Length: 264
Image 1 (cartoon, rainbow, N blue to C red):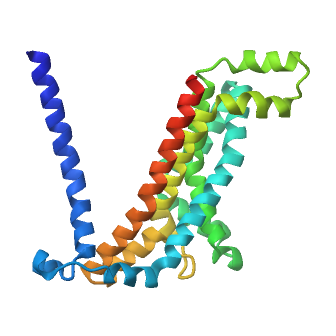
Image 2: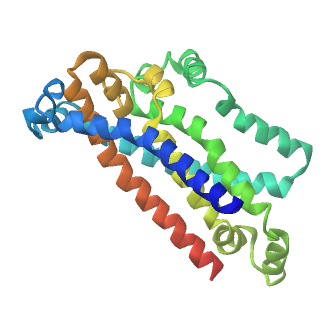
Image 3: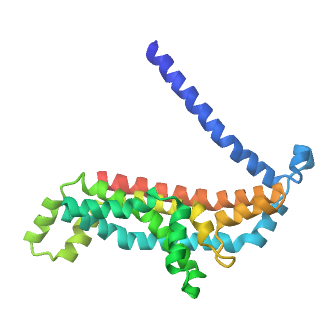
């Protein structure tokens, strides 16, 4: 009986928390589709606000997606070999490097952006390009990719696998691609999911780094809430959800498929 009541209480608390989180999102979607939010359902529904948002801010949607994909590519190129090198090296030096790489996570996004502006703000073309935003996103998300890969490497006997491949004459670079990468695939997928999610939704860092020509979706969303009517800003939220949710579901399905293949 005690277990049953505990289970029911757990379900009830979970449902209330989910309701508390979901209801504001649903109301925002409703406001973005309503003719007039103040008048309620009687005013009817329309897609005019969504079309207006797309005509005004479609460039921010595509830019956010491009920034997220470039950020993901760079974190994969830097983070996966870097994580393997740190675990392979081991010792105090590797721990110090790992802490330095993780440092941007502990620093507020505004402070990290200010440091980048002070360092590279004098390079006009670079400062005004989308690449400048990408650099900030890479610094912010790289620790998540590296930690995900390191966590997997620490749970497998990669040294035995590596030594076995080396005894068969496989060179180091080939062992990395044929032995290490297949075994850390779950960590790579988990890190990719985190990197893309953080990059698309990052506001504080991007708000400091962006220019009028490199505005991303979260920054445009903030501008819409500050300068547009409620229905337009809510329609922008709807566009954000339409873009992000399928992407996250796809990445999650890829993670589940990778986990099943690894177990099999």
